[in-house]
Amino acid sequence: MPRFIAQATRRVLPALALGLPLAAFQAPALAEPGRSNAVQFSATATEELTQDQLTVTLEAVKEGAQAADVQAELKRVLDAALTEARKHAQATTPEALSVRTGSFNVYPRYGSNGKPIGWQGTAQLVLSGNDASRISQAAGKLNQLNVANVSHALSRAVREQHESRLTSEAIGRFKARAAQIARDFGMKGYTLGAISVSSTEPGFEPRPVLMAMRAKAEAMSADAPLPVAPGKGVLSVTVSGEVLLTP
Image (cartoon, rainbow, N blue to C red; front, side):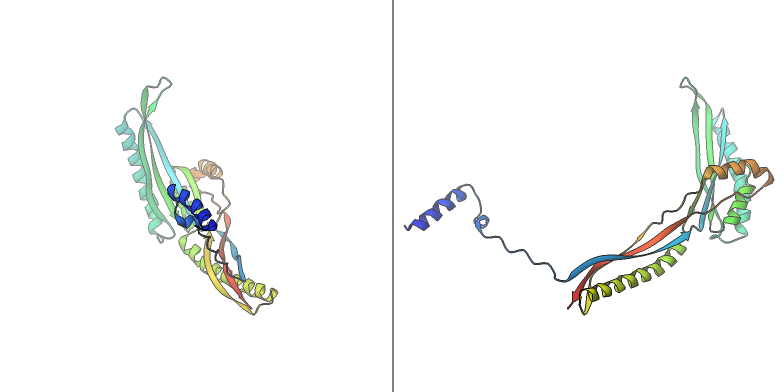
């Protein structure tokens, strides 16, 4: 047996005894080369927006010795408030002002010794819509309820309207930058590769609720509107992707 064959046999036989595949001794395939003249970047369009959706959560809190009494009193207060709120809602559109009930809970109260000393309950009424003036006036009429929360948001209709325009603007910026990059590299033009379009949830300036609650407590005897002020935030649309420069 020639010497070089014997040496090769001595190397392979131990490997076979260990159960190693012959493929392990094969030369690895060459890595696929990446695409040439590929450039990755992103372009963003932004706009500052004012929140157009207002939600006011009003709440009644009652206590009593019996759960049934607390529940009955909450129902009486909530029914009266709901009747009053619906009068304001019926005078406009559901988009401007809508009324719905929120949570309704009755639970035991405990003393310092850990024993039950009575019952407490809460009932909520929620006013929401895009007519902040009408909502604040309706909230001001509901003197039997306290303000539990005031929040602002961007309505779907306004968001979609601005997102559509910002998307077109971001795409235009992406294409303009791609053309500029091609020129800077001395290329004739470019072709589009993989592209993605995304929008960010706008982060809005918060408005202190405690100030509104305090103002309501002081002024509701005169049926004054609830003072509210929407925040502002930035909505952005980003186009990210790859272009292939053509020489």
